[in-house]
Image (cartoon, rainbow, N blue to C red; front, side):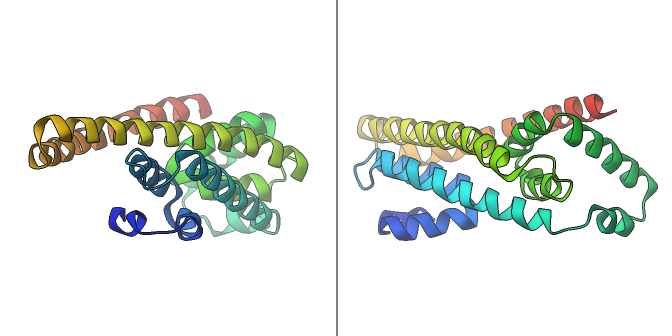
Length: 194
């Protein structure tokens, strides 16, 4: 992905954000630290791509009948879980959207489900999604840019090979930390749902 982004124009970066927005935003922002791209433009592109995708998923969800979703679930435990989620989504849709957006694997189905139960009017959804998406785009762009600055400064100081293996090890550690935090967050969310 990095090699594609190093030689990509902004329209290509924008299109790639529909495939894997968070990763593309982070990598493109990291590359921006080296002057290849402008981090402000990358952030705006990330915001626009994510907002367009959210609106599309919410709109698709509005066309899906919730009863059909519940009817396809054969497992009683899963059906009970979905019923509890439905109560949470219906009673606090703004909070549900915020939590859904930050829990990666459930973001798309969660937004579609919010649409299917019509938890928010379209205008409310767009305004809420804009605020959440803006925070996400800014946070990821800033983090990517700062990582890019740090890696390039470290590489100048200690050499490219030395930097590469340390970034790789750091990335692996970061992956496990994020995975651990995700599990903890899901445990907390599941307790709140129960």
